[in-house]
Length: 612
Ligand SMILES: Nc1ncnc2c1ncn2[C@@H]1O[C@H](COP(=O)(O)OP(=O)(O)OP(=O)(O)O)[C@@H](O)[C@H]1O
Image 1: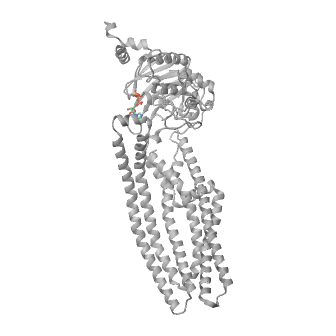
Image 2: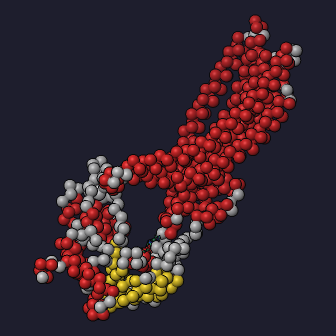
Image 3: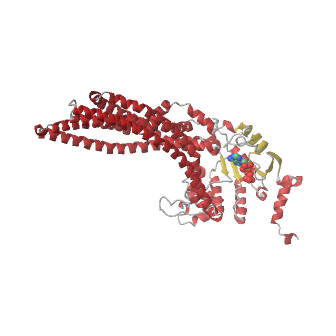
């Protein structure tokens, strides 16, 4: 499914459904905090009205001059002080509870999002830029939306209480004032909604640029890239590209911010004019003796309260709209259908063999990589796969692990289509070394042990496979041996000491050891396992692997044809099909593609003086 399809799927959700989902997520993440915040909000909302009323009473008492009673004034001042202290305390406690709520929500969101990401069993989504953009938006949107929805709900409660406590005051003192403030709030709401939409569009447009910017930033600091960046003088080029992308993303944001500033200035000016008008009317009331000085103070507090409440709602509505639009990406990612539906069948122990039956495959809508591959790997035998760069050898190994499904044809495991099997179980039956294996920033033990995650602490087994891959001696020589951190980017979590950096060939041996961890696997896939090994290591590891393969079913890919020489069957992949197949001797006798390649490679090893 493309990112576009994701987008359409996400659009199905109305803002209301999204709000309910976000609220539910926030509630489940932090129930106690949500309730406490609701109570604190109600209390905080009632306090300004009480403070304003006390202020009015105090002003009116003071206006009595010598007729005022000191005890009454003292009581009013003390009460005002208590309310001020309560307001401040509620603010601080709310801040702390909000922070707890935000962290709890963030952990829940991250947990859900990456659980979903882990549940995507194929590779297609991870090679689709629009899906990766959506994932980034999802992470961004989901962190904020539950907070925004809860914040909006609290703001609504606060506003309703504030409006209820002040609207009466305005109506008593000058009735049109309440109406005027509401009239100003309507266009303000529309403007903020429009701004929210612009913000979301800018965020969507900027996401790809942010991801690309992050790529250049990583390249400039990654120890693995440091050599080539320096040798080829790429630092300046990558730096400039990174800054250009950052400028362009910032430009999108600033354009919206500019429009927001203009709109808000206009709205504030209109609001100030309305307040000025109200002030004029009230001042005239005092001069004519209709209103007291205390009424002026109360009117001022009421206007500020009502205006604050209305504009607070308007502002929150805008923020909520943009938060919900980003939250849509989160919901879309969570609802992304499985790219490779898993079958239910249990994988039986391999007895007959693996068969590629007329397999056709291409990446997306590109050119056909495999166009009718038919190949049988009989149980207990080893098959070597030969072909030019880009012929599709690694693609065949990836199809076998079910990272993708063939477009046409079938891959059969003892005659059963592998699509019928439970994917996780199928993969647990396979040992594999990939050409582009990973170097994990983990300890030596973990780097090897994760090949069979259930045995990551089984030091005896780890040592055994490390010996097979001839990396045990090297690891034993390290200060912390198997507990040594294999990384220069991270310190050892326990000792806080710098880790160890392995050579290319040493990393390859670690990867090979990892792939040997699954003792009871039925199928062994080795894709260029020896490309970085020195001659001595290649020779002895070849011998060890030959022993290991005995009686096992294996698919081997290598450009070093000598490494495939003793395979039971060698298949040559040309133009998306198997062009030749047979043992080494048969193919040499046939004098075709394989024989030509083998002789060409062998001639490179012959010393001309010896040959002469
Ligand atoms: N994830 C991918 N998305 C799109 N195209 C891909 C992808 N992986 C490989 N290809 C393309 O598929 C073709 C076959 O690649 P594959 O890695 O299977 O070749 P190979 O025979 O293993 O080559 P080599 O000998 O260089 O390792 C290549 O043209 C490559 O560009």
